[in-house]
Length: 413
Image (cartoon, rainbow, N blue to C red; front, side, top):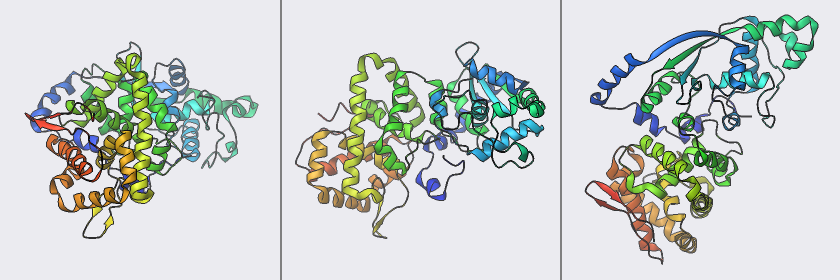
């Protein structure tokens, strides 16, 4: 079971590039968004727990089994939320937005609360560990410790508690008439700024559901490479593991379409590959399988302590923080079997060349440590690492070009 709170190491592990990108728009882009705010129709309802459960069971509130496997709350948090409902304590509101599918809702705030309700009633996926969980560590109703929903429901002396739970109201805000998907992201981030941190990937999967993103989700859970990157056997509850795979696949297929907006680029990747899944699924599956090999080669060269980290020449050590931009360029080239095999044969040369690049090339340093909004920095990190590999490996391959402020790339071979 994963805890709701991240450790300091995990906080250092990642920085949310997309969230920084979404919240750092120039004023000229924000002024039109003020008009969009006025167009939103907001209504509040007091839904009972039973009503919410019914909406979940009808799949009107989108809380897929895929999300249920990425559980952020521990049993104590879940138990005390249920206790609050039973005794009538105030609980935070749930915020939903209407989906393009009529009668369906996307969850903007409250997924862990909704999942807790589904699990306590025993109506979650039966393969989920916390389905039909027993209450623990209660503060006020200690007589309910160890009891499941069915235990309470079947106990004549506790029937009022069942009624209290079923009929407890939870304030539910419904947002309608949101026509701009990007604006949904902004609302999503603003709602979650003071709660359990959530990634843009979670909302992306609700907005761009399809066969490709489902495959990526499944693969991220099985991936041994991602387990090594995250140093955990569990899927990441913020779906950062899915996002890493998505970045890799996006740059593999669409590097030439990158325009400096990472969020839009990843959204586009989902849209295009969901649409082309039937025609390209064999190739996509092979590309994702190569990710496993690429990560392992990087570990073989840099060790499982230092892979995907920046070399600090002044300190003569690797930076502690995991660097997604370095992962991007490593797996971009090492996903090619010929390059990968040559790198394995020349591990010391590759390692020393990387250290030299980090130490002496400011363009590369800016490319892996700067913003994703700068297209030339993105180009530089891919191009410069490719040039470095060409110098030390005994193989030939194509490199990205930069023409008319665009990245041009037609494949390594």
